[in-house]
Image 1 (cartoon, rainbow, N blue to C red):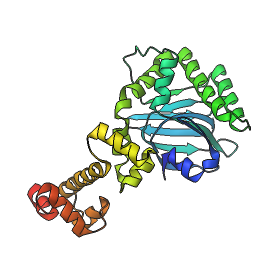
Image 2 (cartoon, helix red, strand yellow):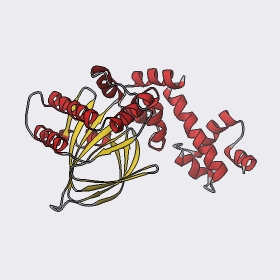
Image 3 (tube, rainbow, N blue to C red):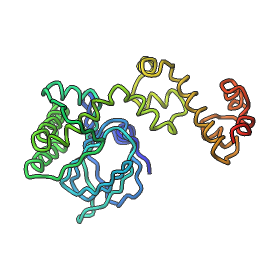
Image 4 (cartoon, helix red, strand yellow):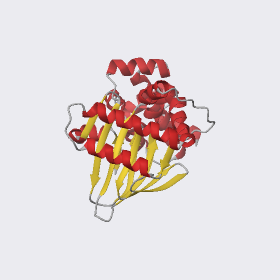
Length: 284
């Protein structure tokens, strides 16, 4: 089971999403244990665990989180397992936010990121005050207010400020990770989800950018047009498979997003000067 967050909720369950500026907030409830969940965050995420437990794995980091805990993940790919609570429910609030929200927060409250630490994953065990903030957040999530989006955004800032006071070193390590990698965010999002991309439309959907916005950002980041970049990445993947796998050339063409073997051969030869078959023979 794979989820692209927040895209999954924006596409499949928009009625459950509170949107404002650069924040998307979702109340998520499940009534079954879910194993082997792959979560691909294309934004950063704060998760408040209301009921149940979550097992989280990211690179060499493993955590078991319980109800009342709150944790933060940067954009990236994570493996998770959800375990139901005693009442037969898993429940959490997910708050997705982009670099701009974090950078604006740092500037607004004059946060000094003087720590040398950086961390893509941080978690906090609920204290009395933090538990109260989470309960307040829950009340607004399920209430009907004209300015609910703005209130939820302020509630998110309130939790950030509380963690700055209570767990400054750990939370600043997270903020610094976001801030220092913000210029390369587009690269991280696209390269981490390359297997989901077969067209420029897919790139726009993943990044939630219009074609004109994507072209501008691709030019700035890669000095390439979106299709040019995508084609180069697909061919890079093809060379790795040709050198290191026993897959047929037809299978490799399909894996790399080419609709026909002949078109794959034409594009490959245009860049590498030889056919995929010859390339494999020369590089085995």
